[in-house]
Length: 307
Ligand code: PZK
Image (tube, rainbow, N blue to C red; front, side, top):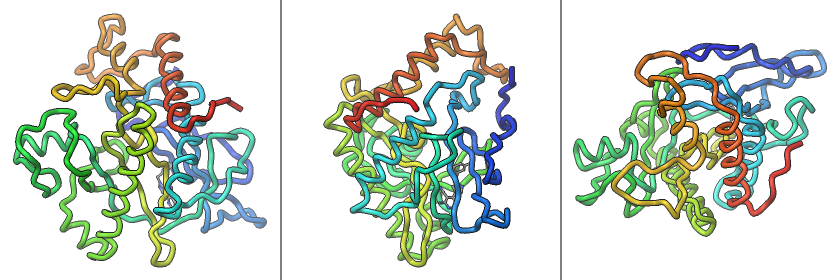
């Protein structure tokens, strides 16, 4: 059994012949393809999504079968839906069989040093800012909004890229302009908001609200390119539309059963203890897997088949 303290280094990354491990995030791993001389190529990366799940800032010991594949396939589908708005980094899905379905070969970009976030509904850090001063990321909002309220227009709420284990901090738009220049900052803002709007237009017809999302852009010359994953439950808050009821915390589409079980007496776990959460019961794992598959199938209209 592995442990799961916050900030703890993940297990040894999978060895992939022909690739060098570059970096591991909480739930994904990055590799560089090797060239004919065995040196890492500097123009491409292999993005591998794992079945790991984070909850309450812990990486849980129980993997969710097929989560990495479902999220990879969902991202690929969104990239297609967005291609008229923004080009993306995808090169190929021809990847080693050990990571088939959950890895993508991408163009290596010069990444923007900003997390591009847009919010269509008010919750989380955006709600805290609003309660404190009636604004979110410098945008004045109407009075009377509550947890879960739909915003009049999606708002760009950039944040800093925190090191693994730390939380991203809100970044004033003026700082984004200083980092990127006014022109690039404005393009990143417009694209981020456009991606969330398009996402919600599509998702609304399929019973899902996308409360907010975080996207990553890189540059290829002067062109902004959409990178990383896009509009997945890991990068966005998905809410079931039929349960949307402003005034309280909305249930998470994907993690509802995990959170509910972890905070229930059945888990024997105290969120405030600092201890690692216990492994999930099989039925919670299975019901959570089913939610990821359901999100994929509802959004894309395709059926998910592993392998
Ligand atoms: C890049 N990440 C985050 C993703 C991880 C970490 N196309 C690109 N070019 C250059 N860098 C990146 C990308 C992308 N995407 C993405 N860090 C760097 C990340 C997946 C797994 F461990």
